[in-house]
Each structure stands twice: as structure tokens, then as C-alpha cells.
Image 1 (spheres, rainbow, N blue to C red):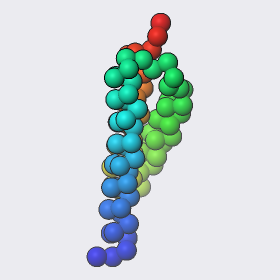
Image 2: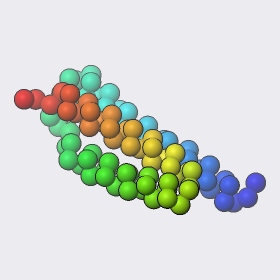
Image 3: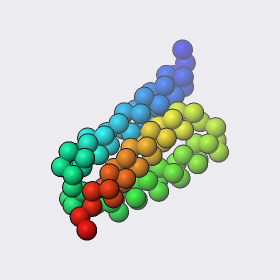
Image 4: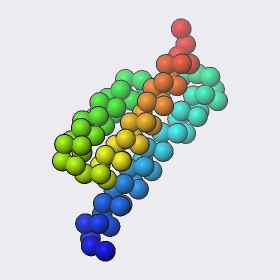
Length: 89
């Protein structure tokens, strides 16, 4: 296995792990049924950056980047969706 192959796998695995890192925040929102202490704007900024990286990964055909950013986008959307669902009115 070459260094580039190992690095590609590592980028994919870390991308998925960082996407999963959003799960505790989304779960906390659902458990508390409140998102008052969550900045939706912060997650929207993260999401915008992740979309740019995803488009870049697609453009240069780099699967590790595509996989990682897709997982991160899913995580961001989970938090944003949860926060909007339980935002105090």
C-alpha cells in the first residue's frame, strides 16, 4: 500500500468521524427539547464551508474528500434541523 492510499483512507475515516461528532449535539437538542443555547448561525457557516469543500472534492474527483464532507454535511444538517425543530418561539 502506498502512502497516498493510506492517506486517502485516513481522510475518509476522519471525515466520517468528524461528521459523527455532530451527533452528540443533535441528540442533546432532542433530549432537552430545546436549542436555545445552540448557535444556528455557526452551524450554517460550517455547512457553507463544507458544501464548498464537497464541490471542490467532486470537481477534482477526490473520493476521500467527498466522503468526509458528505458525512460532515449530514452532521451539520442534523444539528440545524434539530435546532430549528426545537427553537423556542
